Image (cartoon, rainbow, N blue to C red; front, side, top):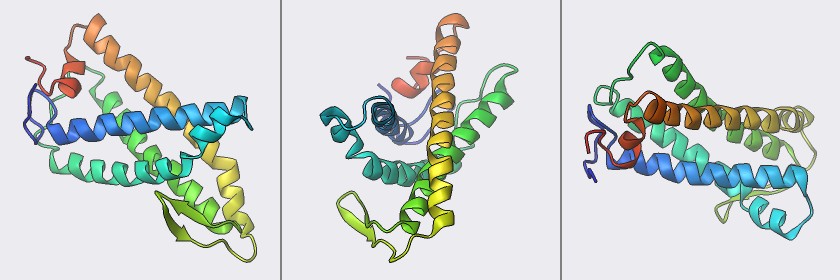
Length: 184
């Protein structure tokens, strides 16, 4: 396993891989909690998963910003994308990063405009309003879930394309993010 910290021409460094896989686990948790909330609300399993939904969302927001900064620091070092789909892949990644930030921000705006306290990661972020700020709660109610499902669809496409690159097109793409070097 390549333990270089910084990204390089043949793969992603340890920090990029750590960001990627921690966020992947959090996103799987979020998707699971959203699906359960949609399909079988008011059950013990839904309560368990959804009980961490807000904290995980804030954590994803923090990690997405840090990962974006880390990606910009490493931009000139990162592996080149092969083939004609290079621009489409770059656009897909930018869209995922934008939604990884937008989805929790929309939820925080909704929470801020509500009458409920908002806490995440065991810390109270802000107290609830005396009166609901309707445009804020409406924004969250109308867009948080919708944009979240778009994000999940983009992530599913990202996963499918990683497998297509690796197994159909024989480009060792997955090794860049698992082993840190496609040559290993």
